[in-house]
Amino acid sequence: MVSFTDVLENEKDNLPAMLGVSTAYMIEKAPNKARNYLKRIAKLPYNQEFAEEFEKAYLMLADIYIGRGKFDLAQDLCKKCLSFNKSCAGAWELMGVIMEKEQSYKDAAECYEKSWNFEHQASASVGFKLAFNYLKAKRYVEAIDISNKVLAQYPDYPKIRKEILERAMEGLRP
Image (cartoon, rainbow, N blue to C red):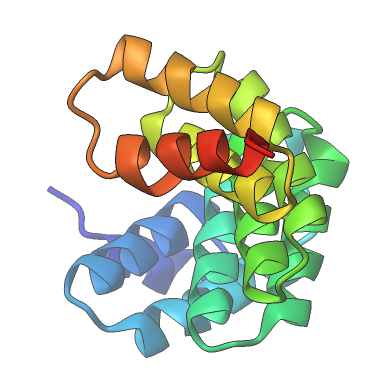
């Protein structure tokens, strides 16, 4: 079996091999080494043939940047990803994370809403984040609606009933 490093010795800009090495470094909990390869990928000219690999690389690097508090760099990568695929649920979710960390709950809710819809309302974690940001933005009815949709699919989903549903219902009471 040919390893990623062997491929990269012969072809230094081989996108799938660089993504493979980056993924391996992330699994090994070595994000600095992964980041170096991901930055190289982000600088490559976009090629539709490798659209999925570019998308994964952009989102992986954006996630690393979010972890380091570099929200502007992460946001640029998400926007770059969305410029090629406007329906990328992962990019919308990371944009929501950035907005939420900046305490812009209304904007975060809009991003999570797009992610939720592009994932066909099937992701419990995105549904939770969406309901939470609706709650923070004082959009109680929407928070209740999303919480109920998540609970209908995942009845045992932790915390959503107490942390969001009950608080949103209390928020509606005069």
